[in-house]
Image 1 (tube, helix red, strand yellow):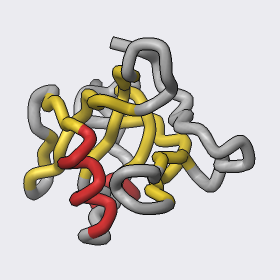
Image 2: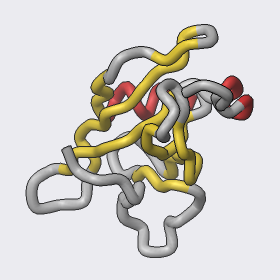
Image 3: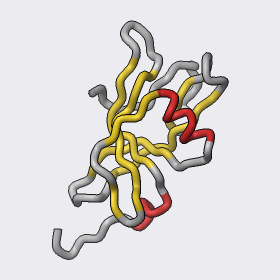
Image 4: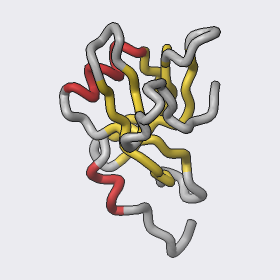
Length: 110
């Protein structure tokens, strides 16, 4: 859009997740859909499985929850993804919303 700029804070992020899929009957995260930053641009939609997400968080990559904004290549970000616990019994949260000890990133399902 003419005259509008993409947010500069997005340059510091690595992955923006915009939708999730949970295991049937539980709240365990199976996979997530998101965008990966490559230089100054964002990738097409990518799918990340649970193992990949754990590796990204543990390698100190900056994963956030958000959704595409009105301007192409821009995102409305509302929280950072964190992983607490070990790989078997651990869980994902978005900005320390872990008071109920279940995975809830506040994202729509896909």
